[in-house]
Length: 289
Image (cartoon, rainbow, N blue to C red; front, side, top):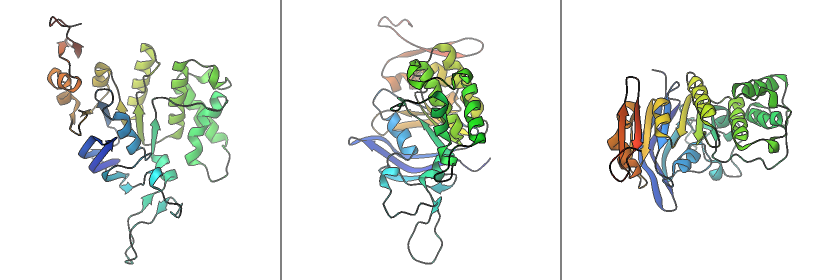
């Protein structure tokens, strides 16, 4: 098997004095799809923000392509800005390089729950923002960057929207533009926080199928609420219980009525046919809804 794209060693993440995960070990390889499940407020988004380098963990190490990278919030003013900033003391032994924020951004990208659009811009101008980690300092986007951005728009079904104003789009269309930004960034690790927000069923399935195709050469970590869609687009699952406890394993073992009932604090029933298993919540009388 290839070397891990992402390695988490003894990772401890907390928010507001409450543990999200403690002592998490994970190796994620190219071609793998990991879904993160849990009730509202357990810290799923916080975990993704830590993996994206937007905030530091309480403890542990995060390795991206076998190299550590520091959270943006922990970067000191005097830290070197080259792609591989040296770490360690003055022993004379060359220390393992730490990825700079720019170098890390070329390897991993984050789709947040609520992508912002503070400035008026066209759809194409917005998608071109995904190319910034690949540009030299003070350089403008070139023809190749525009080609990549146009291709990203085509992948999300918005090829004809390049000249439209972002602020005039619907919520679902903006969500697809946000995904196009991430595709234009061309990372090897996709961090997706509720990517199905505002999307109708057709575009939900299309997005998950698209990300499964991207995962053939990259890896994905996706926060989802729909357990049935998650079960069909995951190789492994990370279940967060809200107190630092978690379960991590192959999707076939994690997606059971017993585990999901405990995870969500409500009884679920598994309904099976020849092709799939569906999880449905039980009503008060014990019947499936």
